[in-house]
Amino acid sequence: SQNKIEGGNDNKNILLNQSPYHDSEPLQVINRPIVLSLDFRKNTELRLIRFRYLTLFLLLRCADWCQGPNFYSAYASKNLSSFVSFLPPIQLLYALGFLSSATFGPFMGKIIDNQGCKIGTLLCVALSAIGALSVKSQRTGMLLLGRLCSGISSTLMLSAPETWLVKDFGNKCIDEKDRKYLSNLLCLAYVGDSVIGIFATYFSMSSISKYGPISPFTISLYFLITAAFFTSFCWRESVIKSSRPSYNLNSSIRKAIRIIRRDQKLLILNTVQALFETAMYTFVLLWPVKFAQRINGLRGPSFLYMMISCLVGSSMFGVFNKIGFKPEIILSSLLGVSTLSFILLALSSHISLVASSALILVPSFIFEVCAGMYFPTMGALKAKYIPVSCRGVITNLFNVPLNVLLLSVYFCLNRANSSWALSASAFTLGLASLSVSKLLKLSGSNNPGTKE
Image 1 (cartoon, helix red, strand yellow):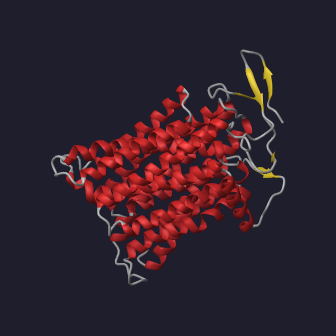
Image 2 (cartoon, helix red, strand yellow):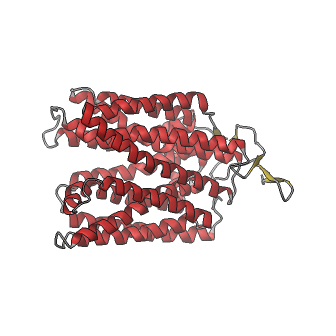
Image 3 (cartoon, one colour):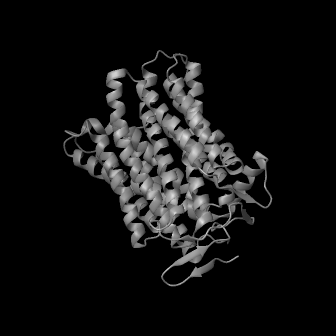
């Protein structure tokens, strides 16, 4: 059915009867259509959506910032016994996190699609709390269980709130103009994430100096409890049902895989996510051991400068989105700049210590700006192209090749020199940039959100 336009020239409202996202099956929206204004400032319903999403997203990210950067120091403070002879216990714990995310992510996505995003978010909070509590134990088995839960919760944290936002926002009002509002909301979320990351990390550092390496995990529990109460009492579930619902996990995952295989745009997005985030993770691992000690006068606050660069990147996405640049063009540009940044970083490893300082800092900060732009851009593209009825499964399937690549990087990085790793990352970013050029052609020849 077509959108019904009501009102005059000065006050236009849209009554929506259909989700904007293409899908292989017709969709039936449970919530009754609502007549809404397109302006966030004048529309109470959209302001509530923005408030609910940003509040929950930032609470979860605050808990994650208290946990993620501090896992290594917490594990290193314990006398751990290894279950396998060829792998140190801390590396085993990190590897288990990647494996659990890749293995259980699609099944968690199906829970989001069938049971709702609210259940998925509460499950994310519970699993993350188990991971935080497990760090207090001295037993390797409990730490392995906690790391398993943390890996699963990370996939839910990246998919459940955003899936709820896309579903609830899509039920209210969506056309090409409205996607800018959704993109601006994602921009606000990642700007807030950068600010939260700065304060949460420095607050965790001061807590560690006073109370020990376990204290940030205790702090994260308060944010998780607050997120659980907020989700339980302030969220209204928005469910979209298919005309032929499937409760078989395997068949639902196979259906999602078929949708990805048949849609070139989804294949390209999956490829770009895996390649870019693998390069980003390689940079994160190399920075403290290969780059930080080669920079004079910046070693202490380097994290602060990195997060400020991410903040600038997320803000730039909001500016470009308001000007009218398509997310595909923004993604193509940031991938090209990221490729050049990694080429310069690879060259810096062959230059003397004094001369390479500027050659390290400039491309590093430029890449962090690109990383800040990447996340809201990818969120906008996923909202545009992923079918809403199986969004949870597809979003988590995207993480499977990513986690496999991350696991490979984690094991190979200690055996490879930094120049080789950076050159390989520049090559993968170049491949991602070429993939987006194909996406630009597809988006130009087809109307976004329509079935090919």
